[in-house]
Structure formats: structure tokens, C-alpha cells
View 1 (cartoon, one colour):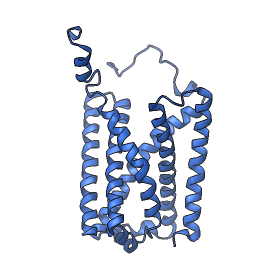
View 2 (view 1 turned 135 degrees about the horizontal axis):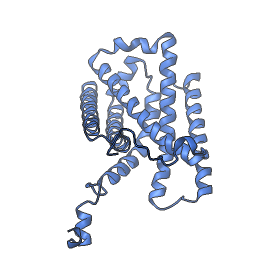
View 3 (view 1 turned 90 degrees about the horizontal axis):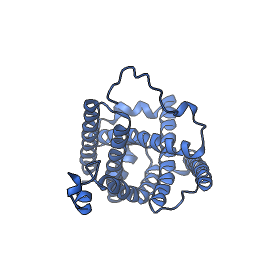
View 4 (view 1 turned 180 degrees about the horizontal axis):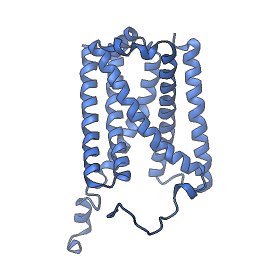
Length: 134
Length: 125
């Protein structure tokens, strides 16, 4: 990384020549959902400050009309991020204990975790949107 | 030169990264905290009547709501700061840019945490 300009040497193969596989996808998603939650936590904290200081009426438009659905979409993505990162993070704790490194099982667990995160997210929001929280 | 040191001394000297296993352990311990806190917070928050402002204020100001939010927010910001630190270290290689982003990460999280704690106390007390 010493020279950032033109270095004629070939790069080792990476992203564009890799065949996508489940563990790669969950690894990338773990980081992506982490960064997503960082932004989500910042947004929720700003909203908390606005609620406490009484300036929240300036963001009321986020919860009205069409914007309510945009906000909801963001919150649904955030729910998925939390659920996925939580499940995959549990897996990290097992890895730390030296368990769960077999390739075949790892792939299966990647798919199970991804599927479970989607199911939990959808279930949670179907419950909320059908008046479960009312 | 380093051969002059004992293995124990080298480990205590924190190795190549200069910070030993501290970061790793902090990340894991905050992960364990969030493993318990996050589902409790998420479910209670979702059922609190949010995003209706009055309902959310009431829940955040209740003893249970304030405490759960305080704990979850603290652990989440702590864990998130560590995670984003690694992302910056992995992808940004220019020393000055990296340092600036690492400092910004710390300041942003510290600011959010203090503002969040202040707000929760305002609502709860």
C-alpha cells in the first residue's frame, strides 16, 4: 500500500472472480448489517434526543402518509439487520469456542441463519402491522 | 532485540497490533450483553406505541423503559464503535484518513451516548 498510483503487478483474484457461496454471503452480510445498525442506532438516538427536547415535531413528517412507509421500510431493514447479526453473532461465539468449522455444516448454518432472520423479521412485522401492537 | 524478552513479556507487550486481546474481549463481552438486551429492548420498544411521540416518551420515561433503553443503547454504541473501528482499519489504508475516521468514530459514538443518556434522564426524572 506504499504506492497508491499505478502498480503494474497483477492483483490476486478477489470479489469478481469468486463463486458466491453461503458462508461468504453471511460473512459480508454480518459486516454490512453491523454498519447498517450503526447508522440506525445513530438515527434512533437523534430521534430520542428530539423527543426529550421537544423538537420532534420537525420529524413528524417521517411518520405520515407515504413517508410512513419509507420509514417503515427502513425499520424493517433494521429489524432484519438486528435479527441476522444476532443469530450470526451467536455463531461467532461458538466459533470462539472452537465449534462449527466444518465446511458443509457451515454452509448449511449460513442458509438456516439467513432464512431464520427473514422469517423472524417478517413474522415480527406482520404481527405489528396487523394490529398486534395496538 | 525482541528475542531478549521472555514470551510472557512479549504477550504483555500486546503483540503486533499493540493492543493485545483487549479489543476482541470487549467486542465479545458487549456481544453477550446485547444477546440478552437487544431482544428485550426490540420487543418492548415495538409494543410501546412507538412511533407515536407521547406513547414513546411515556415508555422511555418509565423506570423499566428507561433502564432497558439505557442498557441497550450503551452496549450497542460500545459494540458498534468497536465494529466500525475494525471496518475502518480494514479498508482505509492512508494513515491520515484512517486516523481522522477513527477519531470521528469515537467522537460520534461518545456524543451520541452522552446525548442519549441526557435525553433519557430528562424523560425519566
